[in-house]
Length: 306
Length: 250
Image (tube, rainbow over all chains, first blue to last red):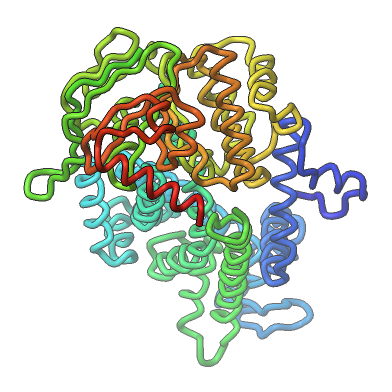
């Protein structure tokens, strides 16, 4: 993605209307998208925040001032100071260090859910939309059943059944997050399944599997990506919610939702214990939302680009 | 090459069933160019789609190259014999596939080898040149898109080409180019055409014989010479000719 400052000749090469090779055509399309995305200042802000978050997660052991688990009961519930920038929690642990390490957990949850749920949804939705008939009926009724439960309650039920742990929380979130993607993918599939280009491919002898993967998926994926980016905030909040309820990350893991839960007892007298992880969740959710908006400009097939 | 006998095509189920084509019969000889004309909704495109296997609900017999077709499945040999060019070049190319991707996938599906050389030749055949190979549809004009669609149809080296109003979505100047290209290709490859159009001038220019359709039925099958001389036997055909001439003068 780092083609921010190409030399003029290189830029011309990328933006050429008559690419000479497969690679040039592909890179040119990517670059075009990047230019559109860069035009959106807020989306860039979101991207920068997220790149920062990823950097923070990767470098956590080196940039965190203290161990996230080191307790110091003599130093508990200290307000933000030059020694503890964001203060300390009830066990005297440095909140900043815990936030930095917690970014790994947040990214792990979000990344895994964002990989699993849309893929399940894409598969079920496109198969249902493309096959039609009773396959469609069965798959969509299953989707309806999942949609009929409030998401967090269903996730709670899954975690309760599987046992509380971070892995199960991810699984539960993924299992409850796919139905909207399935709906979306099915709707997109229905708009293209009778298109002439599908008929043309069928006339070349393309089987249903090839039509689905090569022709239908590429047209569904862009709207799914946008939807995922916009849903990321919700996923973070659900994960934090599970953590808050004690069904996600287990102590002493520095998961942001669990940290808020820990701070709840002291929220009136020692506000920073709950507020700091809350602000972290807010910033990251916001960044994902901004990124999603920008991606929609780039990827939405109904946008300005044909 | 193609015989259609007592073809009925319908959509939907009993109380809402629509009989789009009723009892249509015609035959097209090897190397001939056959036109299907009629107003919108007369069932002409439906006949093409039934032949191509894009519609399952039909009865009657269709013979292609001496082999009868079954209602549902078509085999590889069929797809190598019969290809189709669609009406709207804006809808018939996948928006995310480059020209190269479209043609190489088609060639691979048709079990061709030496794909690079074949793509270059197909592009030359339809007058596009190699500079177009890696473009995406949004980088092409309507006429260029239709040329790509024709190249795709030719990739399998078919003998029968079904043309569903191949020029109606294009500008008048581009229409002539595409029609000339189609005429050249037919001469060069010895193709048989079945062409659907509502434009009598186009059919008069391209075809040897034509069938006039009205309300799902074939009203009359005639030589193009008779069309030019205006010696149609049926009232409806005479009306259609008069309407097209009135339009031409206006």
